Length: 182
Image 1: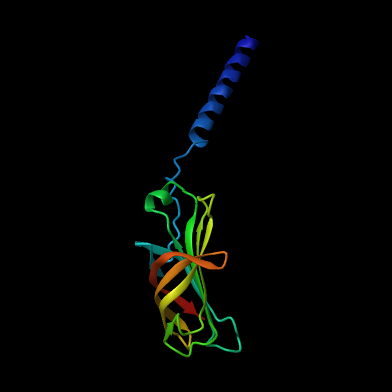
Image 2: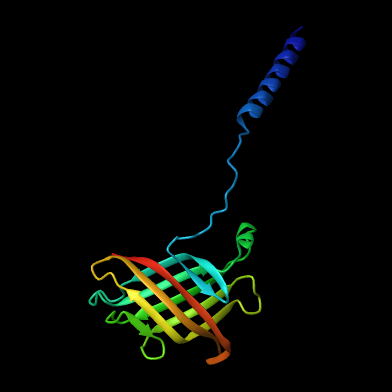
């Protein structure tokens, strides 16, 4: 009798443990949504395709000169299918620096515009980073002198730079973005 009661209570305890685990140990989690980084702050066109920006920032690098600016934008060159499939990052970055915003339009051939365009492709083992130089075109800046939203648009031709020399044919690179000046 004692063994029978012990067996029943052990079986009952095991059943209760299984029931408790089954009802509380599992739950329906919401479906995973892969985050895509889109700042909704602009787009660029490069090599015939249009791409949203992941980031756009404007910095006043010289606190003694409120008209100095540095801009940095990053566009995602992957297709929507590649983004959904978690393909390796493939970005296009554009860095521009201006000592002073004393003009509205800056011409690459005439004005001293410090810049760098880079294509960074983590899926390309042979050429993961490609540097480009703007050879012609213009950059238009609608400055926010008192702070607020600043708009920048550009339409330039870029050529790949390898070991200090330009290679290939010019490629069209254009776009516009907004950034906040605080």
